[in-house]
Image 1 (cartoon, rainbow, N blue to C red):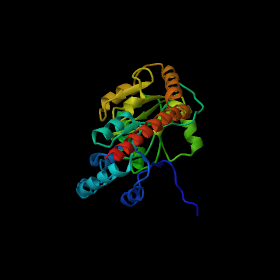
Image 2 (image 1 turned 30 degrees about the vertical axis):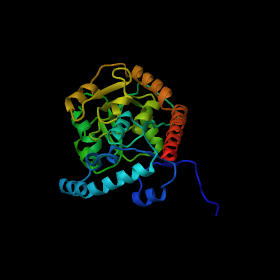
Image 3 (image 1 turned 30 degrees about the horizontal axis):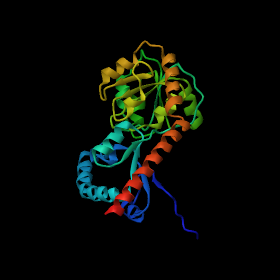
Image 4 (image 1 turned 90 degrees about the vertical axis):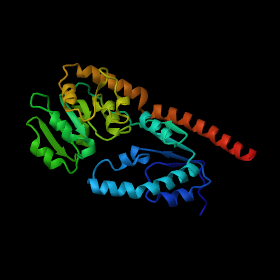
Length: 293
């Protein structure tokens, strides 16, 4: 078999056996895309979805492993990329360098700004905070559609008022229908989000966004122009945003324009090309430094 010898290897998802994989990549040109804050922070990695005892145990066991992995990563990975500015900053702060901001993208979608309902799309788990959204919701508000599966589904169904529909898992066709009818998509997350595709899909469909100030979410919203930002965990503040008497259609139109400028494949390709150019410069500098030594 002809040897596979790429110019650059891209590590995208978090890998199952990181030590073995990284050892096998020594001497290669490697770029790593980091998709969540848990890569640099055990607080984020184990923030939700387990009890306090399990969380403390996992964090304690992980500390030594993470120190070793960090050293190995510094020897193997030439550049990091992150889809949000917030995570890019966090990588640099924790000495994962050089780190470049490279946003996610989605393809263009049919848009219909100013729909009749609010929409939540995501896992029905603690970190995504659908329970916070339910607490903030009232029967006087427009209909709320909730699409996603998770351990909170049954609880949400029992506690939802008449104007809230908990769909659970939906097909792509149904999800498209829900996006097109949405005046705004709500992302009330507790944990630090990066650059979620749900937000980009919402913008592509011409929906405004209502997001918490968690992680990279505020980067996706221009307050009062493409949506609203509230302080994470603040129920009353979220309720106030949901009750705004504003021109949701105008916000949706602005949100679509923002998508076209920043989050289409063409915009991604342009930023990627510049990132690779910088990476080549970094690699040449490193190589020259080694030769001088």
